[in-house]
Length: 170
Image (cartoon, rainbow, N blue to C red; front, side, top):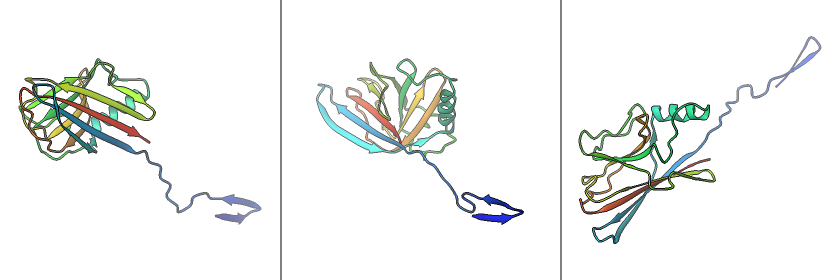
């Protein structure tokens, strides 16, 4: 808007107009399910999660060069049997007893383009319960980045399940 007065032209840019910028956070999860003979019997794919407040703070600290990286040494994928709805104030899996964390597979996490991929393997004898919730956790600091609640069956003790999550930011 152009205003005139006292011989000076004043320009107001964006007066009354809301300006918004946004980034898109798009997680894509994949579970590969192998039986005791190593045969792939199911692949499940699903999208979404909720960023947790503590995870957002960790990302911001890493952005300014502070904090502990979610790297191969520190990052874990966690699974649990709680179906409690995700809330930003949560700080970890909500399961009281049936929960487990697996370290990153060799060479993970990986970054390609605008996507980071985390992958962990839950082998025989590990996490044999209903899988209803998922997190990415920094084991060194105890900070969870995100939480996804969605039922994906019960893992048999002899099975091996591989969990991968790709997070694209655009």
